[in-house]
Length: 101
Length: 422
Image 1: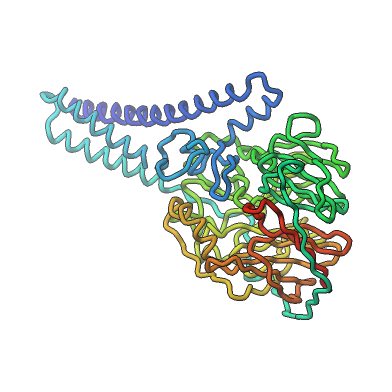
Image 2 (image 1 turned 90 degrees about the vertical axis):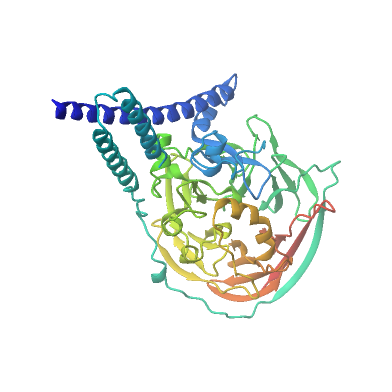
């Protein structure tokens, strides 16, 4: 009886750990998706370039390059791209995420 | 690692909750056993996480087997040289002076990065008018980063948002293509956790060294990656990055197919100098010649099968190449401007089809503006002449080779030098 109870608790906790981890991942993914969706909507409104911009917005984020003051396209999965997204997967104090800073 | 920490923290929290809740039912021995079990679970997860091995490039370059053929032949003769200026008065000519020159139909064109227009000058630098204006009309552009023309006179514009706009020889817009680097449509999490040098979703256009060429309906340009887990700046994968990441994308403007090719020369994995990892390249007959900011060798690649055929090139004289390797991206970014002054590097590599010359320009560094121009014929060095740091080749008009010195922002003017070499 004691053994069964112990096994049940272990299984239960394993499931909880997995669920919590999945929840954390889903939440991160959702926050990223939400930001992307927001960006797409903002860029698409009443614009002939809507299709291009929608595709553009899901692919990269504008950020400054060291050699230029212009805002140029960079990959979302990059030091500066992730900072621009407001994600904490890299230390955003270290990277100039966008040209507005 | 974040997830592992989360698991462990959540585990500890749940365990403590359960402990207090079941204080009367679960004894201390059980609690200790659970801790061990979950520590093991966490370690397993950790092991699984760290099990991901970044793949190697599917097409590697064996640089050691590339034959070197180059002779310092000498005999460069300068038949003529003269200089003229293009004054930007802001009344008749509005120009930011930030952009690149190119030659087409015996005229000089300046692709202005800030006002996003293409300006036309005659061969003496007299302003004629604007060929491409800013806007969203049929023959207008919203953004220009770099413009070039091919041997047929077609003009290709690369903007700062991954678009490539092709004009025919009479400046009529042919098509506009957007290169989406997220072609695999992997999830953000997957892309973050599993960098892969063979997957284009990791890369971006190397705008720090903006340049593009047009060959057989393909836009050819440098790509780079600043992936937090896979880059040339920091982490323990820097050597792997410089050995395996691709440096060129060939983007077919007809069918949108994209091909990655080329790798950094071995010098980069050895010295770890991402700040000087710009690639210089040009179309060389039906081949691609390319070189690196920090490497003296110039490589010749077959345009069809991407094989490296041979290398040539002789190192510049008096260059300060004691480059510093930084610990991280932040440090490298902070030091970029100082390094640009302190160290010498190659900044332009161009082939002139009219004469068969290959030009390469380099700077000496040591906080000077000194630089030199190397002139090659075939794969042999004919000679060098002094040329201001960061000058660039423009093109050939009526037998004369045009070079632009760095824009003189203080006096609002361009300095153009023309040479005739024999």
